[in-house]
Length: 203
Ligand code: GDP
Image (tube, rainbow, N blue to C red):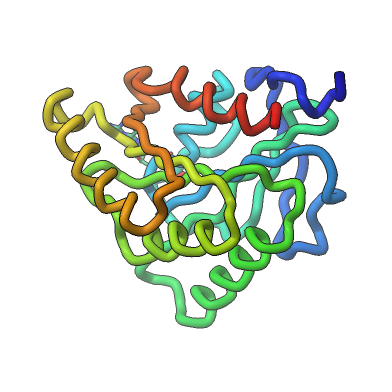
């Protein structure tokens, strides 16, 4: 069995490198799964929860602090990719355009990219750039899985209700997308996320 087709051990995640541009990324081989979302959506917390490491990714109360792509190795051939957060109000138009170009290029050109996890705060889903990402991934046929984050802030019933409504909207934009409830703090949806990631890493 090829090493890259193994079920990853998320607990083994180790920081690999940061890249400000595509040319600084490691060789385009093996399998990558990338995480993306607005600043403050809970992306760092989700990656820490997934890997069972409290400090793998720095959780911050100052959104938009980094514009780098951060890569974490699960094995020689499997990587988790933390894409820079977007939507931070105080960044300049130029920074926003640079960010869009970098993400667009990464999504379109990275051959080892197997899937994208899009995080949306359950209380503020489907913002402008979330919709753009759903459209892009549809155009390039890239699998996308949505985490509705911080669901512990709502009752289970309210969360389910919103999830169903968002799913309906998502299906209109990208019918191949999947969606789930998630909370980094309350152990909601962790196994479901791993199931999707495992499928991508093994495909
Ligand atoms: P990032 O900017 O997307 O990486 O978001 P962070 O992981 O740094 O989280 C931003 C803020 O949201 C922090 O104050 C976290 O403690 C909080 N947060 C993250 N995940 C959850 C969650 O599942 N539930 C709750 N209630 N808060 C969360």
